[in-house]
Image 1 (tube, rainbow, N blue to C red):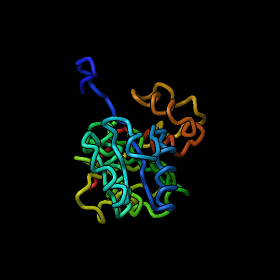
Image 2 (cartoon, helix red, strand yellow; image 1 turned 45 degrees about the vertical axis):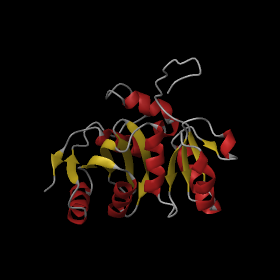
Image 3 (cartoon, rainbow, N blue to C red; image 1 turned 60 degrees about the horizontal axis):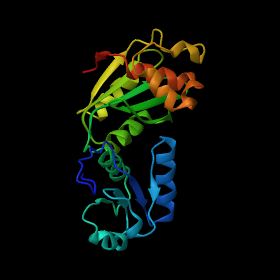
Image 4 (spheres, one colour; image 1 turned 180 degrees about the vertical axis):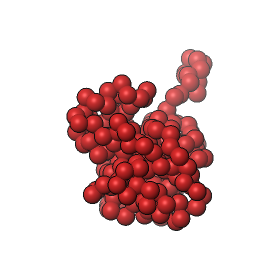
Length: 226
């Protein structure tokens, strides 16, 4: 990109603009982006769009309005999919996919999970149907390689085998849960490189020991389930 003075500016990221027409999907998109702490703005008029923005839209009418702006990157997603939204997020970072999608699962009475795209926190929560949650994450998140790491305690081996049987193209590992469940949040500090920065961006995670355990499982190499 060149400025008016002719200077070259290297952009590390682009503005993500939400231009979603469907009300229900609009609310879900906003919730997903805010939960991850991602910066974005809303579409009002084509003239107000910042240069070189990435515009995510489900509307063919808005798509036609944007036709005059050749500097924009437009992600048109009429089917309103999580994968389309993730493509827009990646485009804002000048990327098409993550190198590695890592999903960590802490088995228990409630199965905690966490998903990382390289070093980026993409999602977390609890799932009763673990296989379906893993399938959803894999379908939503573009990545060259994918690995699921499951804690070895409780029903971990059974869950890992179920995932492998249903999703044959994904690497599944069973991981030792030694030193993965902290008695309090301070126990996670400094354990792994990159962990502290992830926690700093998402303070909620510090207060949930099951999510912390899933995060730490995702960062530990395990034994492949075949």
